[in-house]
Image 1 (cartoon, rainbow over the protein chains, first blue to last red):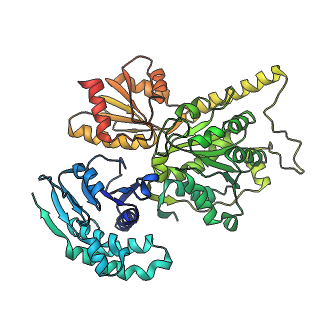
Image 2 (image 1 turned 180 degrees about the vertical axis):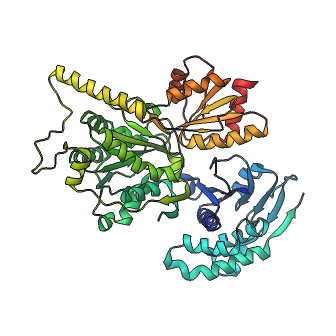
Image 3 (image 1 turned 90 degrees about the vertical axis):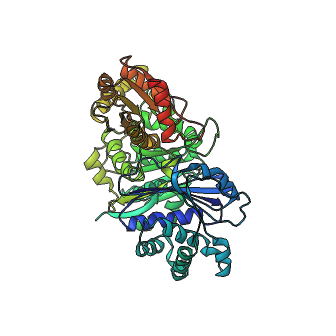
Length: 183
Length: 359
């Protein structure tokens, strides 16, 4: 099993930390992992993205042109990465602020209204975990038990009291993800 | 027991530096390697081992602090990224001339000048061919994973003290910034002056008896003696070339085409091998682990069995010159690479190989 994922959005949406939690969850499940961020000026206010690879084998290139799954959280990222999904792959997006929705017919497209659900939970910080939940529903590459272990590993101890809220957010994402287009 | 962590390359290097029992780190922050000094400052290794971590007033200050510490027989480390390493070249030449051991890290970014902060491999010439003035060589290790960013600290110090020669770990922004699994070795104790003398000989200026009066200098005004000193250095370099060449071969048996790539580019090329297989093209990869000494002999041997060799670097073509020298005209050698902070994808490498050798 090898799953090649790009997660992209605005800086501050928790793109990098979501990737880190996913990578840590992979480690908890004895997988090889890599986490390669975009870094530098584009993180401040612009787009941020991270490539996460989970695999049962030694990981070759941490940098890729095409992905099994693209998780896009704003319009610029959708514009940039819709074309980077492998045919038959998955595009998951948050419709909040999306004016031009995806148009490809050779991939599976799903949406998760994570910004809206996070505002209902009255915590914008749960946003990225709702998205993570949606992804795990579509691609159960790691078990829930290991995601929680990964969460614990990647959060500093002073934030451990927030783990139950994050777990709730992941479950909400699992429940709320919607199909847009299926091939 | 070895400890498993998820870390950035820069952080893994910093943690490995502490665990190696290093005496001192001197540096100055610069993207994309600032995590090294940030990590060391946060970890406060003086509480763990007594190790000194100092942000110098500049890169030039930092490299000369390394010179001083190394002259005292201490394990000293510095790190920077391309423009900062350029500033350090004077000190690096002095360290080589004075035959002092140290480990340095260059997390390369795109140049020239201030350039960009994105990954690049355009400092190959500077690192391998000189950089500073005079006839000298650095032993150059090129990590291709976060694990090697940690492991090469220990390997680097072994080589540095064995040959009394500065060692450069030539990494780049990609390996420095990415996170992977890393197994960390247990903490080693820092060595005492006596242990260093016993292990590596009596050459350091430790400032007290029972040491004889050792002199650390790169200055010799009598040319006859300076020529002799150069001959001694050259003899040492030949020994390193004979004994310390390291490389990794992937999928090389029955390969029709050979990629030569190091560091992050070697990782990208491993995926190119897979993509090639899907298209029925049999590609091998030779990854130099030491860039100096360069695996020339091995590349020359492999040239007998392939139709073409592609040197793949994040530069406009530097290592390709050494590959050509090694191949000596046996088969066509070409270069491919994105540069200026752009990173080639595995697909682009395959397309380049097809275009240059197959179409």
